[in-house]
Image (cartoon, rainbow, N blue to C red; front, top):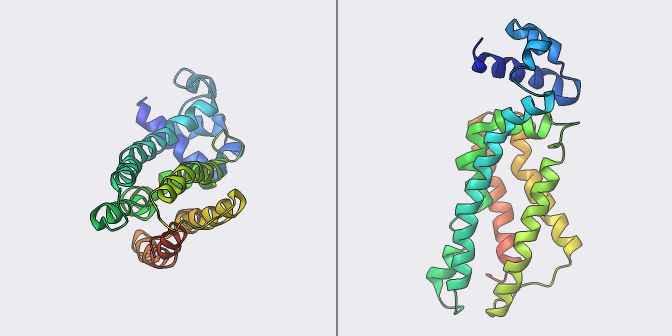
Length: 205
């Protein structure tokens, strides 16, 4: 019995029933194993679900480490408001690029995290994503203000509200199973609506 066949059976089961209602017995039936035999490959249902979503999470973390690092370097390099090259570099990589390059082409994997993870340790994935975004933005707001940008005063509650709206808009095609073509088209609208707002908050306009 190949490991890949078990993984595919697990993917089909979680996709149909979600984490909380998925059954090791049914997963075994899908790939011709008893539930007891499955436990020789995975310690638990949670371990099996983790094997499915971990690659997507690791790739997301890698994307942020690379691209958010670039944005933070651009802010540190921006010593003058008139330094157009540095200020424009801050916007070289945004969450719009993340969706286009990483999330939408692998929509099924990220849909598993958002739509099928209830009852697992990943069930708050989207909220955790929002909180991560907010935590990284607050120091950037402060740094840009020190540099002389007209950063708007905004409470953490207000920032949480607009960040949540932004992230939900980004992940809407994932949550509702858009085609890749429709998702990318939708992304242009999200970019047109939200990016000018972020630039305004950060004092770029």
